[in-house]
Length: 91
Image: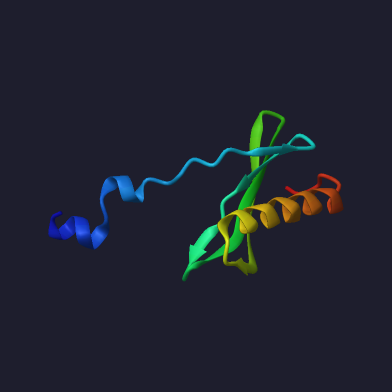
């Protein structure tokens, strides 16, 4: 491995993982937790197409968990609760 590859990472390492959305009440929820110091921060985005335009709401929460699957599940629950509380008026 070359010096610059070690310093900046290879192209395969920098490629973002594709996240499959979860559909909920005509919204798409993307569970995009962030790895931080051996833990995972609850984060993601909610999207919806309105009048031919894709609207996006991104959020990062202060919640961190030691397990990625738990962080993704909590993100999904928080996003669903947000959609319900806002009655769909997110954007």
